[in-house]
Amino acid sequence: MSTTRHLVNRRRRLATVAATAAPPRTAAAPEGPAPEAPGTPGAAKPPEAEDTAAAEAPEDGTGTEEEDPGDGPPRGRLPRLRIRLPAVLCAATVLLGAFAVWSFTSAGTLRDEPSRQNAALTDIGRTSEVKGQITEAVGAAFSYDYASPAKSDQAARKHLTGRAVQQHKDMLAEVRAQAPKQKLVLTTTVTQSGVELLDGDRARLLVFADQSNTRTGKEEETTYAAAMFAVDAVRRGDTWRIAAIDTFTR
Image (cartoon, rainbow, N blue to C red; front, top):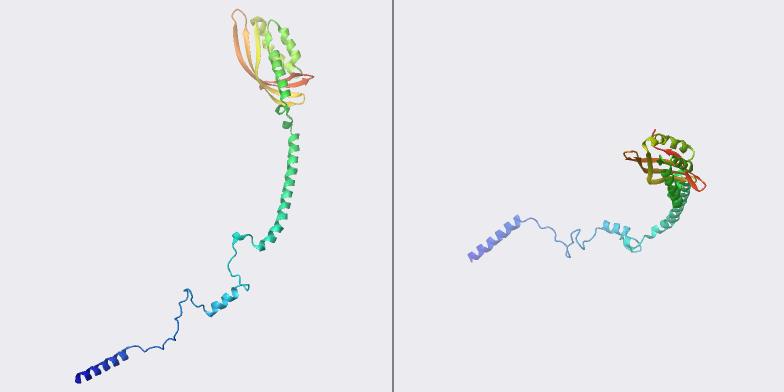
């Protein structure tokens, strides 16, 4: 019995010490589900958040989601597009009109330029005609045979006019003086020619020619030379004649 009493007293002392050392207990929480932490799904919103959400939500209940731009243009932009389209068309019409006026003026200016009146760029028939006749004239007028000097004079009267007559005499003066002694034969052959300008009855040509000068005395000797010069030609009836000779020398 004493042992049992001692055990009971000991348990009481231990219970008294444990009760004295333990912190005081708080009031018991009310029964029911524990509140969820903010930010977790299903968490209850504070009253202030609920009022703000209710105020921002549209009354028709369509929600606050933004419209998808891929669904088509917003209804609010249609009036703007309808207003801008006539303005764009008007601006384009004005620009096209200004471009047409500028094109017409530029075309008239180009037609008035002398370079645009050059028929050598467009009239193939007349270009070929003047080239053929001037090629023949150069070959005949600038060839000389000591045995028949009258032939050269006849060619000069036929193919030359104006200033070219005196120029031809000056250019062949030395040949005429030396021809009887050295029995000279001068032959001029046009190798290439081009019409630089063809305007009405006037033309300018660039001529390339080969010249051979042969001495037919006791010892025959031939020398060769190349020549380049320009000629101004005029048309008299159906014939083109050389009016001036430009050897590009001062």
